[in-house]
Figure 1 (tube, rainbow, N blue to C red):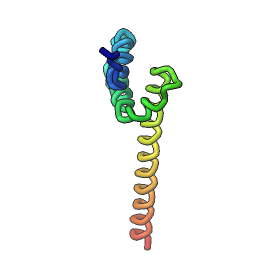
Figure 2 (cartoon, rainbow, N blue to C red; figure 1 turned 45 degrees about the vertical axis):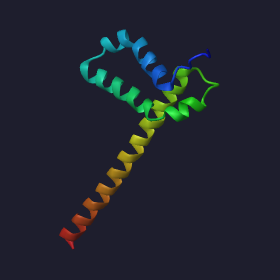
Figure 3 (tube, rainbow, N blue to C red; figure 1 turned 30 degrees about the horizontal axis):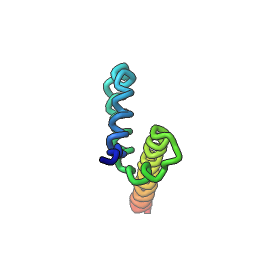
Length: 95
């Protein structure tokens, strides 16, 4: 029989499990953030698979960083849109 390869999702869960003591010492809100980071990494399993040259945890961290950056860009866009809307409303009020 051939060898069974571990899936990226299994690797992510294993890495998350390895940090269980670290997670346990975090405040509750930080534990939730910790869990969200790993959930974000799971959105990029294909990319992690393609980073075979990197250590698994390096690829997971990079996936987390990509997800956080995408969230940050979305928030910036939302803030810019809200700022423009507020400026329009102020102009209407003053106009």
